[in-house]
View (tube, rainbow, N blue to C red):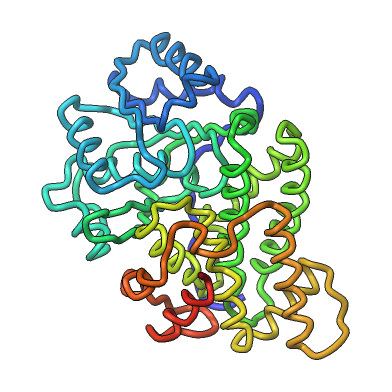
Amino acid sequence: MLGNFSYHNPTKLYFGKDALEYLGDELQHYGKTVQLIYGGGSIKKNGIYQEIMEILLACGKEVVEDGGVMPNPTSERVELGAKRARENKVDLLLAVGGGSVCDYAKAVAVSAYCEEDFWEKYYIRFEDPTCKILPVGCVLTMAGTGSEMNGGSVITNRKQKLKIGHVFGSDVMPKFSILNPEFTYTLPERQMVSGIYDIFNHICEQYFSGEDDNVTDYLCEGLMKSVISASYRAKKNPRDYEARSNIMWAATWALNTLLDKGKTTDWEVHMLGQAVGAYTDATHGMTLAAVSLPYYRYILRYGLQKFKRFAIEVWNVKEKGSDEEIAERGLSAMENWMKDLGLTLNISDLGATPDMIEGIADATRIQKGGYHVLTRPEIVEILKASL
């Protein structure tokens, strides 16, 4: 292990089929007014909305509804949610849904009482909150982002064609999160596999950095193998509780600040994918899938030993041939798995066109920490390879 670090995660989790039973206990810690945040209305069709409303009313809460949050929440929508929270003097933001809803709730939490332009402060200058922060609770209905146990909040600015994530500190992390794998059963297959790849790539972004003997890398490999195994079972039977529970739990641990300890980390795939998403509004996990292999094949020569280890330890590739051949067979195995899941493997299928490449490149932030720091021409080359 290299470097020095501290580790603290304040989010309390309730996991399992009976997890929602603990919502009432948590609500006792907050004031009377709850802003109930959710997406397009699927929670009303599957009964989760009714269950939660019954608990809220039984606890004597006044509910301020904030439904219709889009899959890639926008800065304009955050402004509306912040205004609603402020005007109603909300005591708790309760997000019910997937990562986008949780991300949106955290953005509202730091913006409701922000006296500056929240986009400029948090997403352009990347400053920390200096205002009152509203508490957030999450009831998860989709596994993928890990937003239920981290401070991340990804927001899209349509006017500027930017999709940017700000990782806030522990004071913005959800106070509690409720994880019932059964709540993910009704997700369309495309959303399920998109979430699965989001999980896998979160692990990769932390794994593909450093060459030291790092405990975190062993954790990463175990989590990746679990995700691969569970993904096949869940695709075959979406109601396989064991598979869905493993996917949900892996999603949480993939991005709850544990796996970056002792690591420099490399988030360039996310930077590329988010830039594509800003131009296409495509599903986050699919944008990651579409740019991953071109990026990894480009940087493979710079991090050859880790890619070789990835091939052997995660994909069971035999140690035959050169290091380059072993490493490439690992990426080929990963590609076959992605095809088996039905992931989108090029950005043109997501709506990107050749004339967008320069703009997407301009919107791609260059990250340090990985095996190679890209130049803008290299970003253009990778994006062209992703078409």
